Image (cartoon, rainbow, N blue to C red; front, side):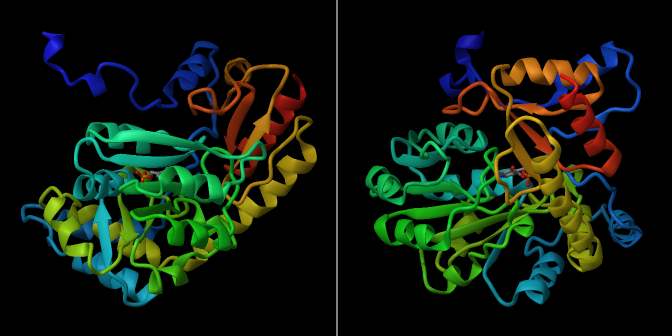
Length: 351
Ligand SMILES: *Cc1c(COP(=O)(O)O)cnc(C)c1O
């Protein structure tokens, strides 16, 4: 019966970080350092949990289809913008591509990067064009514009997952001005970086900036993301989206989390402190990062070997092998709690 399944789903799929956790369990390790998924290591604050609980009492009703509570919290935080929301930023990406892309049209992706863009574009029947970064993983704006000029949508992740570097604003402007379609700028890690692209939304009608509550805001399990979109695009995005897609509990929690500025600032300073410590203390080369993770060059080992060796020692990190366009000797390591980060440094240096 498998012949009935669409060809784009017959191979591949999203790579989850589970396997290393299984290895750690096999080796009988109880306290595992989870540094593979770039999550916030601390649970949400009591205020966020209280807001989610209050919303839970009314889940017999459908959520507000306008997502009013979260939209006003976003407006309080950022000012009046056209916002859209989704089930994680992944959900936003999916709905955005559904809004824009006819089968056979092109989606251009700056690589190596987060793999879901490609999967979501293929699911839409798009032709995917990948545009490699330079050897130092910076974006070559000339090459990107040349390859993406007529694409319906161009995807650029900044700070980039997994390489960690942010793209300078001038280069993003060059891309915005050189392409005919939409630029989707994935800002999942922007809170850890000094580069703010938001002012560009005032000038460019073809810019969408995606954000998430899964990383600094500590709500990965509630699956909620949003985007700044141009005003002309918002009604079409809403039309393309699944009805009531963002649930009321997630919305209430996200709105409360936005107000939790002290906790956000605390995690950001933890990240900045540890990016420096990783760079200074790990014996392998650590690439500069503007995110809550770093990429480490573990040559002559492969990323897969290193993941296995660290998992046996109770440290779960991500091999970068699944990021296509990247050599196989990198791992990606999140900043977690102090004990997790310390264990990682100790164990990798012992290898
Ligand atoms: C984690 C991540 C996302 C997805 O976030 P969700 O909101 O959890 O779907 C999107 N883009 C990048 C680059 C990420 O690393």
